[in-house]
Length: 446
Image (cartoon, rainbow, N blue to C red; front, top):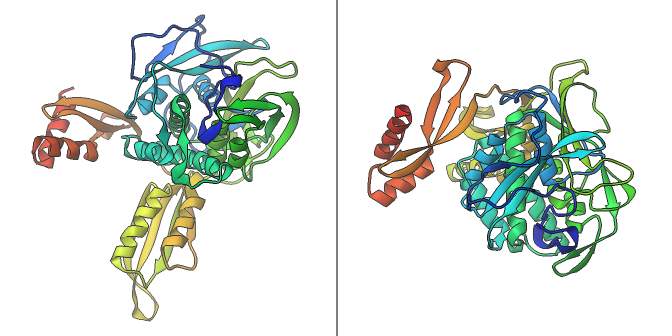
C-alpha cells in the first residue's frame, strides 16, 4: 500500500492509504486470489465473546466518528465489536476476483488497543467500471441484506464520482488497486452490518483540511468525492491537515445510517475500536462503535418496512418490470396481488419488503415505475435465521448451497444457488433439477 501522497482519488478510488489505517505487518503469503484472514503482530485476547448473527436486532449500533471514518476502520471496529472475521472473508470470497490478502491485527492508540484491517494487493489488478462491479455484487451468492446494502453503498460512491467529474454513471471507473480496496471494504462492511442487524446511528463527521495528490493533480481535502457522498450528512470542520473521511467511509455511513446524532439515547452494552494509521496530537486516530439498547420510551425501532400501492391501470408486463425495479432499488422481496377495487375494477396491490435503510429508495422506485399517486408504509420487524454459504463438490463442479439454521436441528434448511445450478446444467447439458438434487445430496453427505 502507499502513503497518502500517492493516492488516486479519481473515479471512486478510496485507496485507504490516506494514513487512516494500520498497514499490514505480515509478509505476502502464498494465498494468491483468495480472501484469507491473516492475523499479525502481537497476540491480544479479544475482550468480548463473538457476536451471534442478529444480536443487534431492535438495538442501536452507534458510530462515534471523532477522528472520521474510512472503510478499513469500519470493518476493524466491527470485528473488535465481536463480528467474526469469517463474516467478512466468506462474503468477499463470493466475488469473482482475487490477487489480494486480508490482514487483521492490533494497534495501540492512547493506551487503547484497537483492531486493524488491511487489504494487501498481491498482483496487478484491472480497472473496473461501476456497472461491472455492481453486476459482480448482484450476481454473487451473498445473502439478500448484504447484497442490497453493498449495492446501495457502491451506488452512492459511483454517483458521487459521476457528479464530481461531470460524467454519466456508466462512465465511472475504479482504478486498479483502489477498486479492490473499495470492493472489499464495502462488501465486508455490508456483511458485518447485516450480520449485526442493528439500527445504525452515526455522529456528525469531522472534516480535515489540506491537499492530496491524485492521479490527475492536486485535490483539496476533504476529497471532492467524499463531500459528494455526504449530501444531507451533518459535518463540521477541524483544524487538522489530514484526510479524516474517505470517499468509501463516507459512502458506507451515508448509505447505512438511519439518523445522525452526537450521542443517541441508548444503554451501551459493548464497544469496539478500529484504528487508523496516522497519529494526531489532539485525538486518538480511532473509530468507536457501540452497540446498545435504546432507552427512549415506546417500541423498539423496526428493522424493515412493507411498502404498498394500489393500481388499477397497469398491464402485467409493467407490473413485472416494476417488481424487478423494486428489487433493484434494495427490496428484499416484491410481489403483486390481484384485488377488486372501487366500482368493481380489477386491480393490483404492488408490495415490497425492504430494510428500513432502503425504504426511501424503494419508495421512489414504486412511485417512478407504477401509476400510483401514493405509497403506504407499514413498519415491520423480521426474525431471521442465521445464514451461511457452503460449497459442495458434485460431478457438475462446485455448487454453492445457502444454509439457514436456528438453535434447533429441525430449523436447518439447505438450498443450492439456482443461478450456479443453471450455469452448471447448461455447461454439462444436464437437467436443472438433476444438478439441484445432486447438490443437495452432496450437502447432506457432509
